Length: 301
Ligand SMILES: NC(=O)c1ccc[n+]([C@@H]2O[C@H](COP(=O)([O-])OP(=O)(O)OC[C@H]3O[C@@H](n4cnc5c(N)ncnc54)[C@H](O)[C@@H]3O)[C@@H](O)[C@H]2O)c1
Image: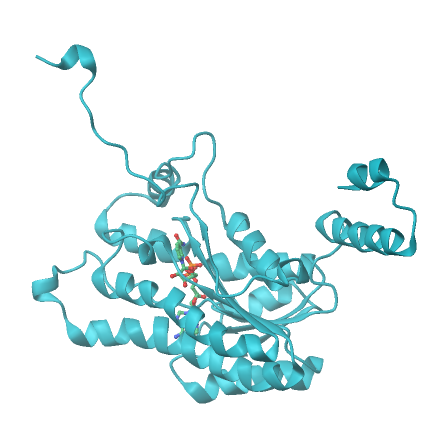
């Protein structure tokens, strides 16, 4: 684009202004800290993808509130990130806990720029067939994974909409893009996430608040390793991690916690200022295609 302007010989004020803006844009994509001065709240930030995202957010200049039901791991993660992080005990199923966590972020840091609704409960494994589904178990999963996310959006909107800006993130899953990748309750809960995001984005765009979700592929976090350990009784953690790491389709790489954390940092940042209602699928192409299992020509009779 700059070459195009030079060739056309634009030398006026407008061209100078455009160049400044462009340079600023390029700077934000380069070495600058994407979340400088921002305040973020991450539910489920005590472990796995939430913990990795808390680290990435602080690395990118944010101050972070880690809201988690785990009162042992949560303070440990906050200590790792001190003095840029605080822990607040929070069960996302309890609306008042979510409201209090949001209020704590505002009281402590003066505002809330980013709300990351990331906590989830996978349910049990091996999963029962649909004919044997325990609807109480279904309710438990939906309570954390759907109601908890809605509560997070509600209370983030309460403070972000009057401020006229903010970025709300929700963690979906590849299990919410294709059927058959997880137990029924978890799959149903994750299919709900892009819908909740679109519904909230439709309203909150009028207040300058963006709402997006990230749908990661399998990463060997405690959630996934714990589930597969039930599926493979007696099999060691290392072997389970190896199995998870071999599940992708993109040659030469695998989904890591940092890939998901960086996707979250992008959506949280002003680099994504025109992105809302989006589902950023971080799956190395896994849910994009299926291969036809065609016989080779020399295999035809
Ligand atoms: N790991 C994967 O392969 C994968 C893939 C796709 C999506 N996800 C999603 O990523 C998110 C994070 O999962 P993870 O893999 O990092 O798991 P994880 O178990 O490592 O972390 C989940 C965190 O959520 C917390 N939590 C659970 N219930 C809670 C509640 N009611 N209130 C507050 N906190 C609660 C846990 O204490 C834990 O710290 C989840 O939404 C999960 O569905 C994970």
